[in-house]
Image (cartoon, rainbow, N blue to C red; front, side):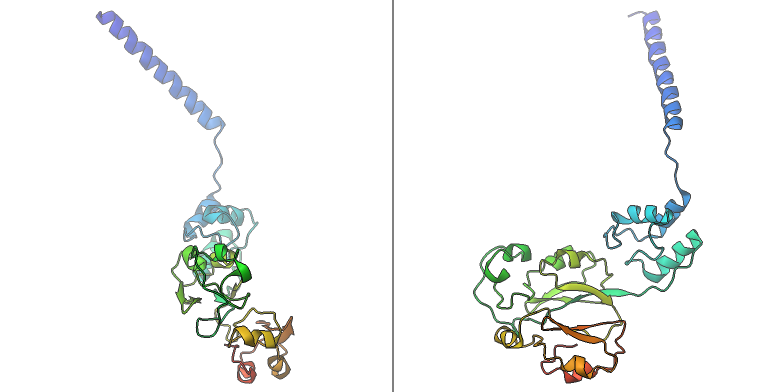
Length: 263
């Protein structure tokens, strides 16, 4: 191959590269996506867990929503008050009061308290066990199955399975809500971390039926509601409910409960 041929090939390759570079530069300017500086700043404040507890697809989704005014500045349950304060400064609005939440299991049906109808043999998965008679081996059809689907999805290692039921550590829980979604019996809810009184049961059966399957279940007697001075308790479908906004944490309901299911 002659030198002229080599130079010609080099010139063609170099010229082609220059043309492509120019075209890419023009295309980049024409199709460039404008970056919202506020969105970028908000995203930097978020913890990056991408847990979805805010209701948006990860931290990027929440940052975009906050920047557009479609989500509150305190919308991240994991970041808490410090995160909300930083984002409020970026957005130029007040963060408002942030109530720290924690996940809470509405069941006291441990191996000691609850009876089993049969010995379960199969996949140790709560959703799989739900396909069996009674929604699992536990005699109480409302009770925690105890195979730990909630523990498996918790990104903060806040859940352990102890004595056949889930135990949630409020100090580790960030209220991301993954366990709430994962529980097939809907036994987990988010409550204020400083809430004192909780009904640790979800059974809607009549008291006589509850006592047959669990020593710790709510029997719907209504003594808690009758003695609550702030009228924060109601009994619906044989189960006591506590309105945390009305509750003054006096503890009278706990004292009056005959089965000691209010904790």
